[in-house]
Image (cartoon, rainbow, N blue to C red; front, side, top):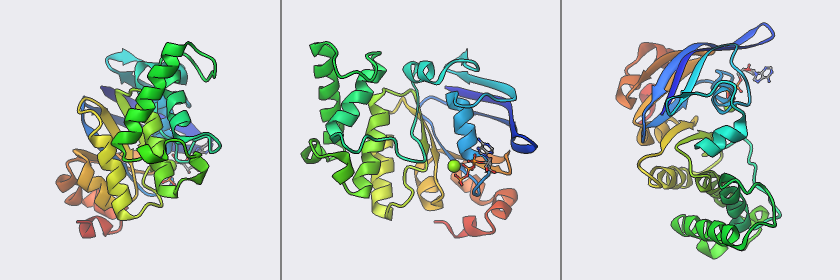
Amino acid sequence: MLAIDGVAKAFGGLRVLVDVSFAVGRGETLGLIGPNGAGKTTLFNVITGFLSPDRGGVRFAGTDIVGMKPDQRVRAGLVRTFQKSMVFPELSARENIALAARARRGAGYRWRSSASVTAEADGAAEALLGRARLGHRADEKVGNLSYGDQRIVDVLISLAMAPKLLLLDEPTAGLARQEAERLVELVRNHDDEVAIILIAHDLDIVFGACDRVAVLDLGRLIAIDTPAGIRAHAGAQAAYLGTLAEAS
Ligand SMILES: Nc1ncnc2c1ncn2[C@@H]1O[C@H](COP(=O)(O)OP(=O)(O)OP(=O)(O)O)[C@@H](O)[C@H]1O
Ligand SMILES: [Mg+2]
């Protein structure tokens, strides 16, 4: 689904990504971990087209996408969430999600579109909220929802865009363990075909939810393996100062 080949990115003299290569298969959930400033968000920015790599290739579903604009990538099924939430707090949960569903169908962020597009988008929003057990909150302004429910709405917005590859940048930050597990389960159970890359600092969450885990350290991919393999990996352990060994 995704193939990264020798990607490099520097800001001025700061080398933030150094020769990063890996691939993600259809339906695979890959965890992306690494200390603060390791380059995780920068890698997402390169994959989604918000930044151009200085070097290297990015292929999505078999197509070279370097040079493709972010909105074209979204319509092709390459969807991300942001480390900082992008919801419209004054709109209801249903409206936020329906807007995303419409944007995916090419209707853009316009209020006025054909009745069929509107009905379809509202139906998709309704279904997603129901699956997240938030149907009873559909008409509440997102700004009035609890922090945890707002993070769920973030994820539902990205699912409404019908991703083939979903990039989640710390969706569980600030959530209690149970809330974090609920959010990750929601994404994983959505569609077996969707590939996911999950950035999170909570190693229990990452090791519990991911098929494989990639470790970035100072812009270098120092390991990519199963959770068990990463726990046993000396370099990954060093990057985390032993905390890997403690994660269950
Ligand atoms: N637009 C930019 N201009 C200059 N430097 C940047 C820019 N974006 C990121 N950086 C720097 O690149 C490095 C990697 O940042 P990045 O945000 O990718 O890290 P991260 O792994 O996502 O960290 P965190 O876990 O804290 O979110 C940091 O040193 C950061 O300050
Ligand atoms: Mg980041």
